[in-house]
Length: 321
Image (cartoon, rainbow, N blue to C red; front, side, top):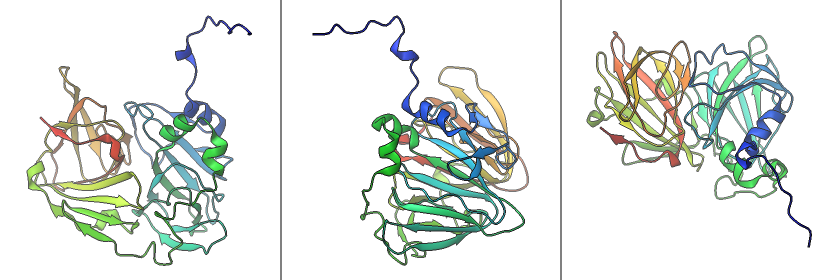
């Protein structure tokens, strides 16, 4: 029997399957703690999608999930695609439409605008169109790509698996205009949010800050989210939870206190609209919560602070301190 090969390199030096795939995508990868402005962050041509893009794999996610910013040129469309990972998409700017379908079945189309939130059902075909001939449309998506690609180790399977998840999407005509269902705990199960900025929120005073919130379960996915608002001059109770929660600050500004347990407390500014779960700065900035990080958002201006959080359910329960 042939003897095994002997290597002097550590196996830990090998790239993850996800990181190897990211390199093949040919777009920049941002790995900092937050993105100062996702509305203006530079993008580069993304050949696979026919748009422009940048990938965000922020500190603290541990490759449980990731995000990207994508831009559709004026009057153009992205390439059709399907894949075995979930996406939760927020419209940063612009307007357009998305067509969703299963192979060989009727196509369903819905329109979106700035502030819309939606999620293509798992492994369904989908194509996004820019409805404005003069301005680009910019999108931010949180995805489960790192977890799935690292689990399967085969991008051909990820992008070309023919299986149809009919329990999630069975080509229903009313799929994206269904009013959904409200559950206890301020939870709305829906497939499309037309405008998260103007969604009526429900009181949640126990969380502090004169807060209100709506939790979102979208397209039968494990990726989920919530929209929260805090009143003027108040703060959200310090807490921590698992990795992978990304936040967009929709309105207002203030600051966050952030610290690993037992470590020095640090203060970060937060301006709207921004992107991250804790440390935010500039219009549409971004970052992500660390697994053992404690943080507190404090309000110090004359208008409420409103945020939308996008995460996977594996982030676990929030623990207040």
